[in-house]
Image 1 (cartoon, helix red, strand yellow):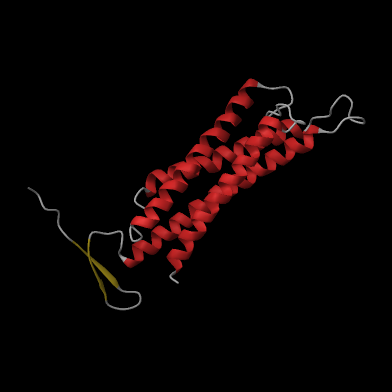
Image 2: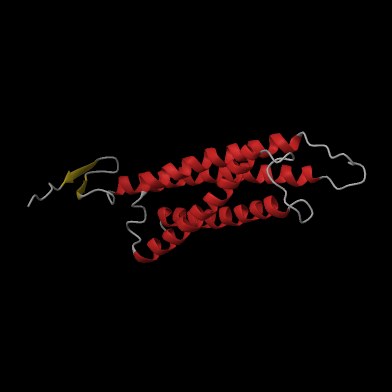
Length: 185
Protein backbone atom coordinates (compact mmCIF):
# COMPACT_ATOMS: atom_id res chain seq x y z
CA UNK A 1 0.00 0.00 0.00
CA UNK A 2 1.12 3.49 -0.71
CA UNK A 3 2.30 5.54 2.28
CA UNK A 4 -0.05 8.40 1.44
CA UNK A 5 -3.13 6.15 1.53
CA UNK A 6 -2.09 4.76 4.92
CA UNK A 7 -1.64 8.30 6.26
CA UNK A 8 -5.08 9.29 4.97
CA UNK A 9 -6.71 6.31 6.68
CA UNK A 10 -4.85 7.17 9.89
CA UNK A 11 -6.13 10.74 9.54
CA UNK A 12 -9.74 9.57 9.25
CA UNK A 13 -9.31 7.22 12.23
CA UNK A 14 -7.82 10.10 14.25
CA UNK A 15 -10.85 12.20 13.43
CA UNK A 16 -13.19 9.42 14.59
CA UNK A 17 -11.23 9.11 17.84
CA UNK A 18 -11.22 12.88 18.26
CA UNK A 19 -15.00 12.99 17.78
CA UNK A 20 -15.52 10.21 20.37
CA UNK A 21 -13.28 11.98 22.90
CA UNK A 22 -15.04 15.29 22.25
CA UNK A 23 -18.41 13.61 22.89
CA UNK A 24 -17.09 12.09 26.13
CA UNK A 25 -15.77 15.45 27.34
CA UNK A 26 -19.09 17.09 26.48
CA UNK A 27 -21.03 14.46 28.45
CA UNK A 28 -18.71 14.93 31.44
CA UNK A 29 -19.12 18.70 31.14
CA UNK A 30 -22.90 18.43 31.13
CA UNK A 31 -23.56 15.62 33.64
CA UNK A 32 -20.24 14.77 35.32
CA UNK A 33 -21.23 15.80 38.86
CA UNK A 34 -23.32 12.70 39.62
CA UNK A 35 -25.85 13.61 36.94
CA UNK A 36 -25.81 17.35 37.59
CA UNK A 37 -24.13 20.09 35.57
CA UNK A 38 -20.38 19.80 36.02
CA UNK A 39 -19.10 22.89 34.25
CA UNK A 40 -15.56 23.99 33.61
CA UNK A 41 -15.12 25.58 37.03
CA UNK A 42 -16.49 24.88 40.49
CA UNK A 43 -17.62 28.48 40.99
CA UNK A 44 -19.26 28.59 37.53
CA UNK A 45 -17.11 31.46 36.26
CA UNK A 46 -19.02 32.86 33.28
CA UNK A 47 -15.92 33.62 31.18
CA UNK A 48 -14.49 30.14 31.62
CA UNK A 49 -17.85 28.49 31.01
CA UNK A 50 -18.55 30.42 27.80
CA UNK A 51 -15.07 29.80 26.37
CA UNK A 52 -14.94 26.10 27.23
CA UNK A 53 -18.48 25.34 26.08
CA UNK A 54 -17.79 27.22 22.83
CA UNK A 55 -14.68 25.12 22.20
CA UNK A 56 -16.53 21.88 23.01
CA UNK A 57 -19.56 22.56 20.81
CA UNK A 58 -17.71 24.40 18.02
CA UNK A 59 -15.02 21.82 17.50
CA UNK A 60 -17.47 18.94 17.79
CA UNK A 61 -19.34 20.46 14.85
CA UNK A 62 -16.08 21.11 12.96
CA UNK A 63 -14.85 17.55 13.55
CA UNK A 64 -18.08 16.04 12.23
CA UNK A 65 -17.99 18.28 9.16
CA UNK A 66 -14.32 17.44 8.50
CA UNK A 67 -14.95 13.73 8.91
CA UNK A 68 -17.90 13.71 6.52
CA UNK A 69 -16.06 15.81 3.92
CA UNK A 70 -12.93 13.63 4.11
CA UNK A 71 -14.91 10.43 3.67
CA UNK A 72 -16.87 11.85 0.71
CA UNK A 73 -13.74 13.36 -0.83
CA UNK A 74 -11.78 10.14 -0.32
CA UNK A 75 -14.50 8.05 -1.98
CA UNK A 76 -14.93 10.36 -4.98
CA UNK A 77 -11.48 11.81 -5.74
CA UNK A 78 -8.53 10.00 -4.20
CA UNK A 79 -5.85 11.83 -6.13
CA UNK A 80 -6.93 15.28 -4.96
CA UNK A 81 -7.69 14.37 -1.36
CA UNK A 82 -6.72 17.74 0.09
CA UNK A 83 -7.98 20.80 -1.75
CA UNK A 84 -8.61 22.96 1.30
CA UNK A 85 -5.17 22.73 2.94
CA UNK A 86 -4.83 26.38 4.08
CA UNK A 87 -8.29 26.57 5.63
CA UNK A 88 -7.96 23.17 7.22
CA UNK A 89 -4.56 23.99 8.72
CA UNK A 90 -5.86 27.27 10.15
CA UNK A 91 -8.76 25.46 11.81
CA UNK A 92 -6.51 22.70 13.12
CA UNK A 93 -3.96 25.15 14.56
CA UNK A 94 -6.84 27.03 16.16
CA UNK A 95 -8.02 23.67 17.53
CA UNK A 96 -4.61 22.98 19.05
CA UNK A 97 -4.58 26.28 20.93
CA UNK A 98 -8.32 26.23 21.71
CA UNK A 99 -8.30 22.75 23.25
CA UNK A 100 -5.02 23.27 25.10
CA UNK A 101 -6.30 26.53 26.57
CA UNK A 102 -9.67 24.94 27.49
CA UNK A 103 -7.90 22.03 29.18
CA UNK A 104 -5.64 24.44 31.07
CA UNK A 105 -8.65 26.43 32.30
CA UNK A 106 -10.41 23.27 33.48
CA UNK A 107 -7.33 21.89 35.25
CA UNK A 108 -6.66 25.29 36.83
CA UNK A 109 -10.15 25.50 38.33
CA UNK A 110 -10.68 21.87 39.32
CA UNK A 111 -7.12 21.30 40.56
CA UNK A 112 -7.66 23.63 43.52
CA UNK A 113 -11.19 22.43 44.36
CA UNK A 114 -11.84 20.91 47.79
CA UNK A 115 -15.51 20.18 48.56
CA UNK A 116 -16.87 21.31 51.91
CA UNK A 117 -17.71 17.74 52.98
CA UNK A 118 -14.76 16.11 51.27
CA UNK A 119 -14.72 13.17 53.72
CA UNK A 120 -18.34 12.15 53.13
CA UNK A 121 -18.99 13.12 49.50
CA UNK A 122 -17.51 11.97 46.26
CA UNK A 123 -15.02 14.44 44.89
CA UNK A 124 -16.12 16.04 41.61
CA UNK A 125 -12.60 17.40 41.16
CA UNK A 126 -11.44 14.01 39.85
CA UNK A 127 -14.06 14.18 37.10
CA UNK A 128 -13.06 17.79 36.38
CA UNK A 129 -9.39 16.86 36.19
CA UNK A 130 -10.11 13.97 33.83
CA UNK A 131 -12.16 16.36 31.66
CA UNK A 132 -9.19 18.76 31.58
CA UNK A 133 -6.67 16.03 30.77
CA UNK A 134 -8.90 14.71 27.98
CA UNK A 135 -9.09 18.25 26.58
CA UNK A 136 -5.29 18.44 26.55
CA UNK A 137 -5.13 15.05 24.78
CA UNK A 138 -7.60 16.30 22.14
CA UNK A 139 -5.37 19.36 21.63
CA UNK A 140 -2.40 17.05 21.03
CA UNK A 141 -4.48 15.02 18.55
CA UNK A 142 -5.15 18.24 16.64
CA UNK A 143 -1.38 18.85 16.57
CA UNK A 144 -0.70 15.33 15.22
CA UNK A 145 -3.39 15.90 12.60
CA UNK A 146 -1.68 19.14 11.52
CA UNK A 147 1.60 17.29 11.10
CA UNK A 148 -0.08 14.49 9.12
CA UNK A 149 -1.73 16.94 6.74
CA UNK A 150 1.58 18.71 6.15
CA UNK A 151 3.32 15.37 5.50
CA UNK A 152 0.61 14.28 3.06
CA UNK A 153 0.76 17.64 1.30
CA UNK A 154 4.55 17.37 1.00
CA UNK A 155 4.23 13.85 -0.44
CA UNK A 156 1.83 15.27 -3.03
CA UNK A 157 4.26 18.09 -3.79
CA UNK A 158 7.13 15.66 -4.36
CA UNK A 159 5.03 13.52 -6.67
CA UNK A 160 3.82 16.57 -8.59
CA UNK A 161 0.13 15.79 -8.06
CA UNK A 162 -0.75 19.16 -6.58
CA UNK A 163 0.83 21.17 -9.37
CA UNK A 164 -0.50 22.18 -12.75
CA UNK A 165 1.78 21.10 -15.53
CA UNK A 166 4.20 18.35 -16.33
CA UNK A 167 6.67 16.60 -14.07
CA UNK A 168 9.98 15.49 -15.53
CA UNK A 169 12.05 13.13 -13.37
CA UNK A 170 15.77 12.98 -14.18
CA UNK A 171 16.85 10.95 -11.18
CA UNK A 172 15.85 10.11 -7.60
CA UNK A 173 16.55 13.66 -6.38
CA UNK A 174 16.22 15.61 -9.62
CA UNK A 175 12.68 16.66 -10.46
CA UNK A 176 11.69 19.46 -12.80
CA UNK A 177 8.22 21.00 -12.90
CA UNK A 178 7.15 22.48 -16.21
CA UNK A 179 4.20 24.71 -15.47
CA UNK A 180 1.52 25.03 -18.12
CA UNK A 181 0.81 28.71 -18.82
CA UNK A 182 -2.70 29.90 -18.04
CA UNK A 183 -4.98 30.23 -21.00
CA UNK A 184 -6.45 33.70 -21.22
CA UNK A 185 -9.67 34.15 -23.13
